[in-house]
Image (cartoon, rainbow, N blue to C red; front, side, top):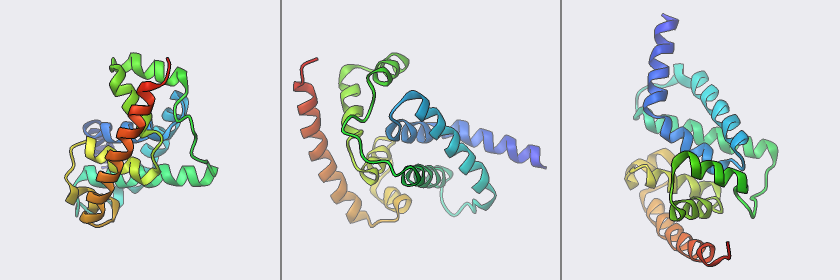
Length: 168
């Protein structure tokens, strides 16, 4: 019975690993920290899996657990928002791994400057969730999601413009 649960759990993780990886990437300051965060999130998902009651989609549940875990980790460490969200080596490594272009790298860097809740909204938006789904996952109203998205987009435009104009 337990081995069946493990197989089901691993399958769900494989299907939804993009959610976990995206969140960990945005909250981490290095490749090593990203791996540690991913491990912490997976452990939290495993521990809470028996309580998953299927009232929401599995991706919604995974996102909430992952986000809560990452925010909890940051609170415990009493981390302050860094002015330099990613190290240069992390940027280079990530750039090589994903084969992303400069614009994507700049956008990822700009997202790193956002507050934790705003990062969560952006990730959900980029993952293709609609406002209703995002509101449910984040426990805020749909109108709050819409307002946040508009403010975040404006902020990201300014940050991206600034980052693009920096000497390389």
